[in-house]
Image 1 (cartoon, one colour):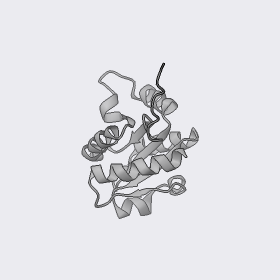
Image 2 (cartoon, rainbow, N blue to C red):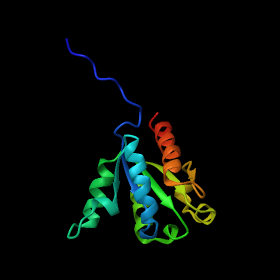
Image 3 (cartoon, rainbow, N blue to C red):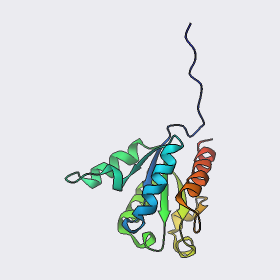
Image 4 (tube, rainbow, N blue to C red):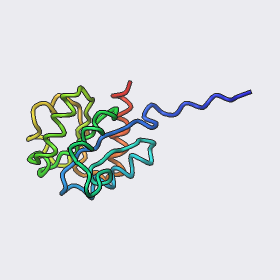
Length: 143
């Protein structure tokens, strides 16, 4: 007699696209690790694109395959062409987006389409604590 596999939490193995500025790479890497420990499969430019890869093709493939997008918004990233490109692609594909605000300035200057999504205020949070809040937001978004 076969046993049924026990169902995990709703965000178990959810595929997440993490968008961030190069200047926020350290925070993004720590957040990626913390989210992965919570059972999420995270795609991030810094850990997924290798030298010689077509970054545009890699981002396009990742956005097609993920369930949800997380965007780190800092004072630097709100002006980043690549982060803004990725946000536009996320929204254009109808993906659910969880903005993570790393500074009050980023929240005030976030592009209008992102303001439509409930975000996580992470200004004074470690990546581990932010990951807990993001994981809960992902569970709510998946419901």
